[in-house]
Length: 212
Image (cartoon, rainbow, N blue to C red; front, top):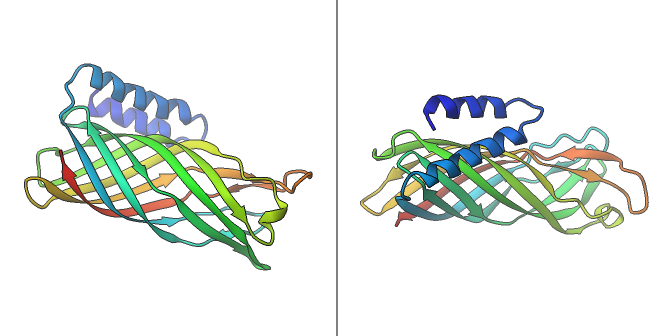
């Protein structure tokens, strides 16, 4: 897979409609790369990530708190330039509107990214990524949330950009930004849907890792 083909997939992904097939195409292309090259290593890092929801809620007028939580990152190199990346972390946010606190909900954003690393042998190693997530909501509670149906899980696309910087032969620091495309329905128990709320969080992370 060349840089030109990767750019093509990324451009197709940016279109608002029918983007998931493009994301799946990138992930399949990364798997094709792994079939023709020996994996060359694994990066593991731990750090903190700032989750900043970018909410659109025209009916309820909901907003959500920004949260900082621990995170663990795993990057598996298929070749010098291509890698698969995922991370493990859980976040809990408080939601409110002009009338006060609505409630709290926790989210577990399972995701898989296909990354392209521009300068894999340099100390400064920038990359971009595209992938897919499946986010599960749980522990929903609060004055308004107790009267709602459970928020449904959602599957969508993720964009990523960041860089790693070498500290020494084995260790590095990593700065990473992801944009999740995430939405769920707001539905009273036994009632009709009020709205589809768009969450679309930014995840901005800083971590220290080791190369294996």
